[in-house]
Image (cartoon, rainbow, N blue to C red; front, top):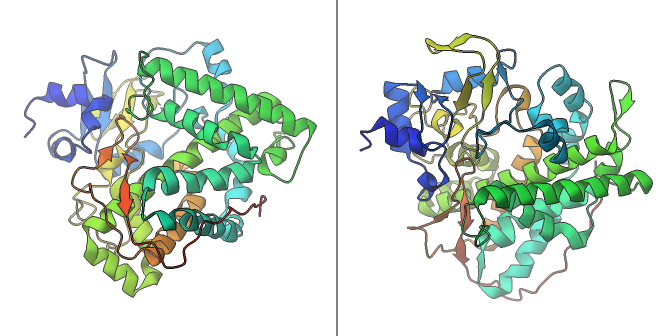
Length: 432
């Protein structure tokens, strides 16, 4: 039992604190004893407000008038102020995630139609084809790293084609994205280099790449979304190459993380809860509800960051203008006052809105695509390998990071279907 508040304060934004998974005991204590808690960590350089109850988390994320996203939507690894030149070189100054209304409204409105439910449904055949090919390729082996060869490759194949990224660059970009997201994780750590340096180098590499891609698509447009972005008009002005590059960086990064993390934790949950897998097998129509329960339980992004614009209050606590406020989605999703038996994995759970895809104006733009990818992946994987086994399910390899929640690797064993052969991945266009 954690009895020292300083231990909790120091742990909340420390990647190593999450090396063995979610410290749900600490979040339960926060919800019960101090739901709007002023953390004063000795290892971060800045105090911040921890918001842990569902209603307060939703209230903060839904109130951009009082809580700004200008610094970032996620707690950064360092509280150090970024200079204007740093913001520009990384593309952060044109990144939707860092915008507040009215600019955020103008930028997001310009592309929302391409991520609507109807538009994403037209991508179903593409997603199904990618999953079929990935499964066919690994089927003869009898084992795989589910994270590296399915959970990560599915969104990579889908988003890279959608954007028109050349095939030879996909894996390189994917690896840079994960170095930027989880530089403390052993899989992405660069020997002899600090995680902060690894992250900064990866972000710079992504920014440089997307700047070149934006220029290429402007000069030679094709049948892809990157080309559409080069013609997109915001407030009567066409996006410039810097803005297009920022959009590309955001879409690549955001699309790769959520499906990857949720899928791997979801497979583990179904393995650990065979009764839930049997429920889904008996009634495949439960897949959408099952995916939402996986998202709630997994919370692929633990927390968000907001900065108070004005003096205000949350849960009776006085927040000063300029204070950092960190709503923890992973805690909100386990709030006992909202979700009955919240730590249980139950695909028949009463449908209530979880916070895993965000809330308010910054709610995940590609949420329909994330859900589609997960529904197709689980359905087809369970059909192909109904008796799969996770040999290390008792000791999963959690990502070492203070924001991302998922597995670094997840070994899966299965019986290769008779006659299984390797397939060549099909191509696909924008399909919108």
